Every structure is written in C-alpha cells, then in structure tokens.
Image (cartoon, rainbow, N blue to C red):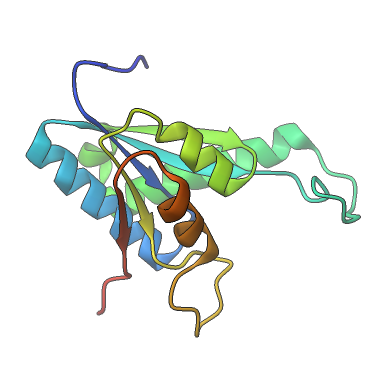
Length: 147
C-alpha cells in the first residue's frame, strides 16, 4: 500500500498495552478530524539482539508472529472496517528509534503513556518519555482508558 503524501499523516505506536490501544483509538479519531491517514507502527526485535544470550531463534518466525499479533490487535481495537483505513507497519529495531523515524514529516506521533515494559508506579513510560523529548513533530501521550 502506498502512502498519500497530500494528506496529513498521524503515526501511532502500538505494543499491545491498554494505553497503546487508547492511543490507537485517539489517533484514528484525530486523523478523521484532520482528514489524515494513520500509520500504526510496531517495533520488534529478536531476543539477544542487544548482547544478552538467548536460545536460538528463527527471525522469520518471530517476524511472522509479530505481524500476526499486530493485525489481530488492530482488528480487536478498531474493528474490521476501521482497520482497513490504517496502514500497519512492522519495523525491526529499537522502539524509540523506529517511532522517531516513522514520525518524520508526520502531523503527530501518538503513543501510550505506559507500554508493556513499564512498571506500575512509573508516571511515564521510557518510550513515551524519549519520543516526547526527541520527536520533530508534536507528540500526544494517551493514558489508558479507565473502565
């Protein structure tokens, strides 16, 4: 699927956490208001990529699993009709670097306040904190929706 460079682009980080689900919904609503498109970005990497030892892994299998999880997550959070309007991007690499690169030229970068790796008492997750400090576009940090 090609990108439409004539429309504003909203990039959202998706990692399976409740706050990333809220960020995804927020990004879709915002893109609708500004006539923009949404790129839902998930970063993935292989265990051991940063020096710690791990069991041997199959990179193609890990990527396929990550792609399947992203597709399932978009469908679960948005429903089938909305999912068709979102471009799903699975990029291998460090989450912060992947999101900053994806957000270049974007109208906004939307992330959850705390992702899967966060601990309960953290006020702001490390990814959201880093992208807020280094992104070249506005950053929206969305808290998980309370039930």
